Length: 183
Image 1 (cartoon, one colour):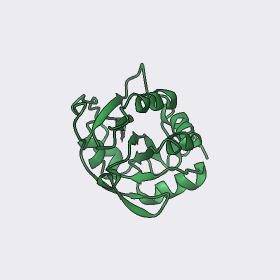
Image 2 (cartoon, one colour; image 1 turned 30 degrees about the vertical axis):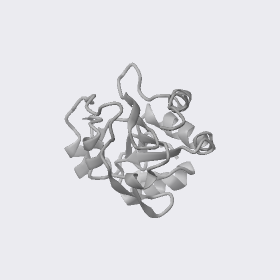
Image 3 (spheres, rainbow, N blue to C red; image 1 turned 90 degrees about the vertical axis):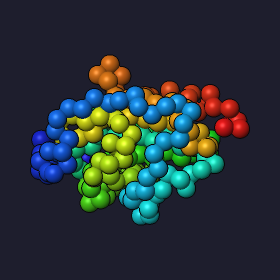
Image 4 (cartoon, rainbow, N blue to C red; image 1 turned 90 degrees about the horizontal axis):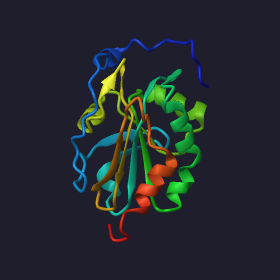
């Protein structure tokens, strides 16, 4: 349920750690592997390691959720669109890993309230967000999308800007189409 007036839980440790703006950095090189990580998958109740997806293309969708009651107005429609079109990715052999900075309890509520089907990974320490240099502002890391080929090499990245908040599902699918079959 999208609530615009319930700010309970907003002022937490994560909020203050991400309060000052840090711009996203174009630091990860195309054609190179990205940082590995292990995070809990709230949707499926398991630990997900990026390394487990060697041999499969992956979309890393970093999203901005402030609390289980407060969604970024730019990210909320993107979350819904990715979730509704999840099968467009999986039918092509692509896994989508959505990463949020909400804690496990908050993430469980998000999964239930939004009917999330795709893996929602919880990174409340924001360490994976920092390793990917997505930036931060106003209490939460910024959104970003990373397209990885079967070898885990970065083929495309979209970092948040006020002119282009998130790459559309169509843009992301088109980026996977550009990857050579052997990649």
